[in-house]
Image (cartoon, rainbow, N blue to C red; front, side, top):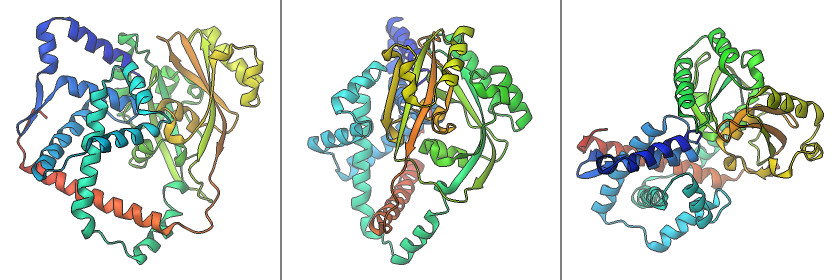
Length: 406
């Protein structure tokens, strides 16, 4: 999402540069059997993935997803499975509700990022139809026993929720309105992502990072893995000590995380149910005055409520209480390393002219259940096995397909 404006600028320039450029944008880039994927579709999907905060290279992920969706579409046509219009409407409503928005509101928000309604519609329609097809085709082959449920419940207490990670961070400023800075930040991030030495990473943090942790070489304290977005948890668990994540696009910056160590917590913490946080917009970007003001705010406030007594314009303070999956990835990265009433800053907005200070107000956790929900566990295990069937089928379709340009 951080480079969304830059990508949209490139798209507009391409469309305005003449008939040949426009033709190239809509010309086939990849052909899956007899189905073409255009540069426009790849560009749109990459923008959508950035808005969703999906870790990884948006362009590469877009190409992979679109190839698989072409394979899914051809298989669905072969067996005659379609999603009725009312089913599509319901699926779009369900998808939009995850962001606490109506479909109309969600589509309008995507529009501000340069994403067409058709891009969202195709993404939802293909994947919901495929999910229903997999369920109908393989449901009879999936049986979950009571013994398997017991085993899953026994494992649940010691898996992801009970893991803590020791990380170091680098946040490199990359205002999307400044393409030369975006390119420079991405180049630096690609280079740093290859290091395996904590000393080299710490040196890079002191040199290029924009957040307060730079003074400590980017080092963070032990943090529950569950504080981080679910997609990022998977990436972190795949790292060995010393390894670095791929560059992570965030608002106005590029982020990198290096894993230093992993441990099991003594008491496995639950994932937060809601997170109460505030973001303060400080004019001046990374100027000495703005950074000094951020430090003064940090010294003067004890709770998020205190932010409203500093004489700052109310419109410069955003406070929200939302579920973790509704928090933008860049804000989630800020919050993950904070305890209640702690602050951090360093990301920017508005072409680098506004410094963003993030404060964690509180995390609320669900009350422990009186008894485990065995049916919920059964459904999770069933879904995982159906996903396995889906992956095998897609692999078979890919193996027998003719794919050009992937």
